[in-house]
Length: 170
Image 1 (cartoon, helix red, strand yellow):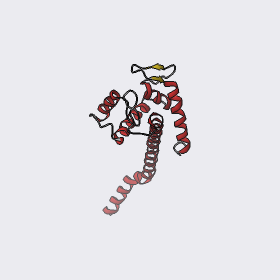
Image 2 (cartoon, rainbow, N blue to C red):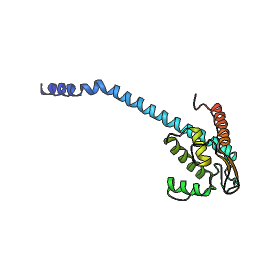
Image 3 (cartoon, helix red, strand yellow):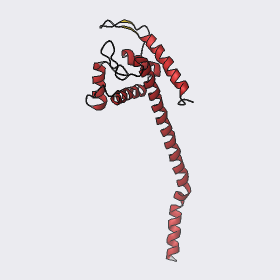
Image 4 (cartoon, rainbow, N blue to C red):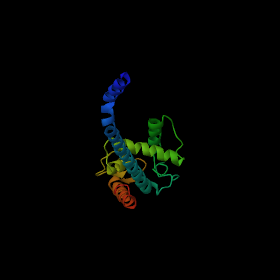
């Protein structure tokens, strides 16, 4: 009789767990899948932005040198490269290695997205350091002409073309 009482006590104590655990587990699973989808969507957005930047900055050439000593697929100027390497990795990385360029660029784009910048603002920051591109046309201290609004237009076209050829945002 004591065994039956124990079984009944255990059953009634655990009854709520048996009744409610499956829905709770399912809710946790659904929430996990939603969060996973958001992470995937964010990474796909980062990848699309990076591809558009590489396309307009260097045509995807990881070894190209620009007019103002900007280098690589993303055309990092030396001071920006040094700053971002230290910020994200705590040390200077070899800019001639394509994976380093991709990693630094990815971290920076992710930071800009997390700050709430849209794709066009990111393109502007990439080109001139500011999310505001209107009217930024001229010649820099090295004598190189710049036209940030035109740069943002080129980025927008590249970005939209990439979106059309991928299934990221369908």
